Image 1 (cartoon, rainbow, N blue to C red):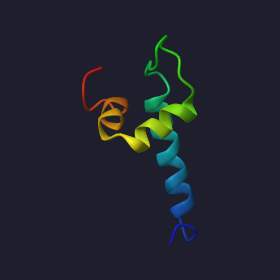
Image 2: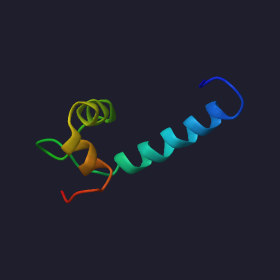
Image 3: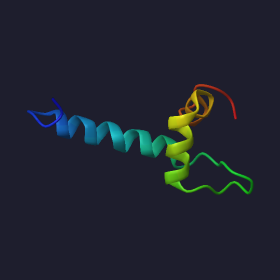
Length: 58
């Protein structure tokens, strides 16, 4: 369950770590893409997710 014990703090920390990994990666036509769009594209495409997390080259 996500709302018990230390789970909320753990998930919050994990979310912050992932957002800090995703933030500096340039994407889009001119290298500017909103965080919301980056997150959505990473959710839809495995290759994009791997690229954002640094598992593959740009």
